[in-house]
Image 1 (cartoon, one colour):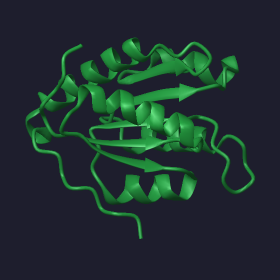
Image 2: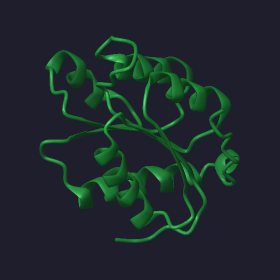
Image 3: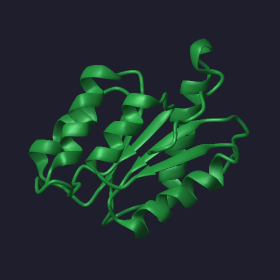
Image 4: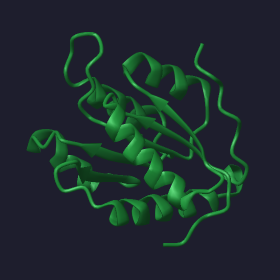
Length: 149
């Protein structure tokens, strides 16, 4: 596994603390200079997305926040409409085909099942997406991330 030494801003949107830490550890293993923020719910996620520039977003499709069970899909749809240039890695236990099947056709989006999570494959995908993102001239220097108030 190659470790990247470039600075990247990464947002993890995950409501399960154990999964958040697992994902963060995977990212830390390959991106020694990454600045990682964790949003635990829909509100925090939108705050970070609207107030920062991210090189990669890692998203759980099934978030629980205001009583709705698929708020992660709302975030995904928002990203596809407004931030198509940001790669998204979905890590989710949610496997309903009507939500997942179209994801495989979208550029810069990858899906990982929590039930069959492979940390090495995940790290390879994250590394690849960040390498592609960093080579773009306008994204060489990651912007500082605003803190959640």
